[in-house]
Image (cartoon, rainbow, N blue to C red; front, side):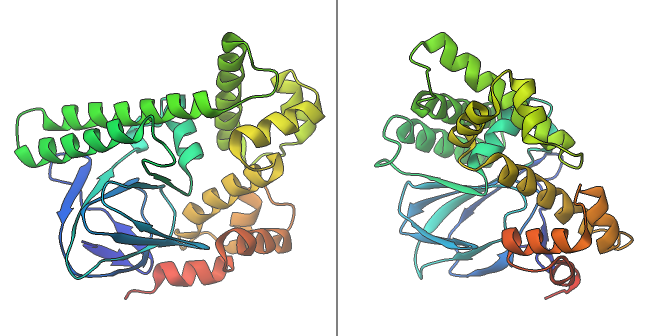
Length: 288
């Protein structure tokens, strides 16, 4: 399945003339640790399939669906007999939509949908994945439009399910709840675009219109992490991209990603990625 691997980085070879790649994969072959800029959606259709990311290993059953976000290092393990859909859409062209960027934040680094944990949306997601597979393999005219339509429907259903599950503080009123969610989607997008700048909790909470204490509670409830952890995650994601360019020194990357010192950058990079920036760069540039 991995067609072009340079160190840990995989270049996804999209289907000619499109920005999609789908494997109806039945190979008894494990895939080493790698990452790519495409989103990856995996759904076993026969037997199990194992996905490993840093600090987490998940055994997917038939019909379970894993979303692995861009930049997440992952390893795949196949059983002797089995089949699974491995779908890789290029989401870069969709990032102009704030909701898509917010969904990638929600799903990051990996989210798994099962019938037990997501009974309201799992069935429709499974059916949409099967339809995407059939449409992609059909070779029909305008298949790419139809596949992306199904993919956006998947994101929409996940977003609606996420919104309805978020019991935001003081949000018994549905209109107020939706207002809060829209506001925090905007804030997350703003942080992603300005993460290299000096962002403070005081400034962003003022932007939101909430007190610092109240904003902190709502933000962690919405994203699952604290404000400063979220900012650092975005900075390290930016650093990963910059480190793949050999002309960028580690010191320059630290400065351009908003860190006050090289030591602070190295420390945070190791906390989030499990290796130093130099080790990451070496893994990227070392060919298997």
